[in-house]
Image (tube, rainbow, N blue to C red; front, side, top):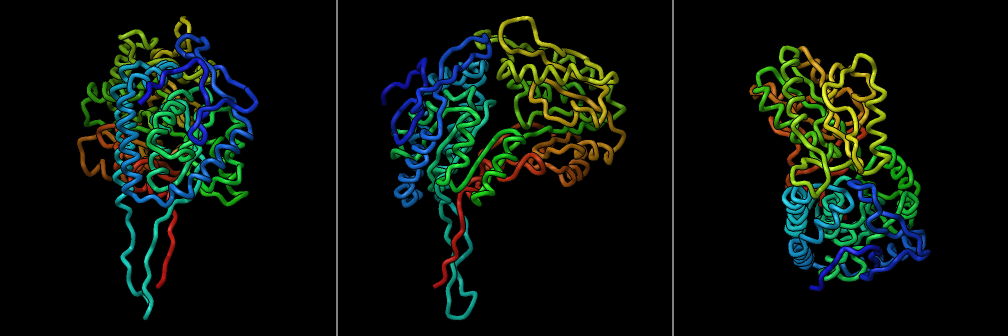
Length: 477
């Protein structure tokens, strides 16, 4: 296989070929660790989106008729090729995000290839009702069939991983897709498409780079029959409204604001250390990050002190610094957004540690702990999506659950206790799509990842994620 080197100018990948935007328009990509432009990407317009959608539509005719075994072999080839091109994928991802390269290599890249390998197997294990005679003289059976062309939009926090979560189940189910990565972090998705092209027929996987207008052109295009987004609540609402006009199916994984219930029977030091490691990973730019720590009032002061001490040991810095624990925020605008929430804190809130950006180039922010907050504060109610964690006390289980459920999001939560019955009561009562007990943040390909309330609907990963990209047909003989 030819080497796929990161280039100064990215290209779209449509119908198996690399091409610029028809207009020649580009967007500068800025390294968030330096604030300097490091490459450019196409700013695709309606004609580019139209070409990609029709390429996917043409490819669907053949790809949808392939056997599960054929699709399995293709996805396994993609996974193997991604492993073989790990260095290039690391360079592409780190250039756009500023992440510590070894963190990406050891934590995220294996999860990407495992996603393709899992869905390769799942493609051959679709569930269904047994054929039977539900009325005399007639036999009924169900078919699981691909939906068609899928329009998929991914975010900037985990660019390659989120592309894998979208692309792998869609292709495994027999669909074709047009993927639009985030405008600030398209490099690894473009590289994914180029690598996958040697395992897929032209047009099965297409990538168009661009901005919000590009995304609107894609979601409004008449060809796609399913719209899938990982992104903000604002974007989810807009896409759902667009889909309604043409009765397209919608798959949304939106924001999170994860509560953590820390009961009084846990080891405070160990719990604080484990939660701090997860909370500040990827600069807190994670929709499942433990952002709202709810602590039993008798252990509250001790926990705040322990957690803040852990936060102070963490270092944010550029990817070439081996002592870096997490990198920069995505953009100057996002840094302003995170800092703006802290600048607007009410007087009763206390910044225990952090609270400001260090004086250095790039869009870094220090690990921050805010105590003394109240349930109706902006910093509690809204997703910050940065290295900022709040701590609130609770007096009993009922109050802990009320505080945990008292926001509009419902993606993930965790409960920390040595009491099994207490943990199971919380599991039942928490209004989230994911609940961890005495751990937080781990995902596996075999289990669903999705939320409720304003965190969206539909599942990534797991057999549920595969079924979301299929439709059921009843056949009666």
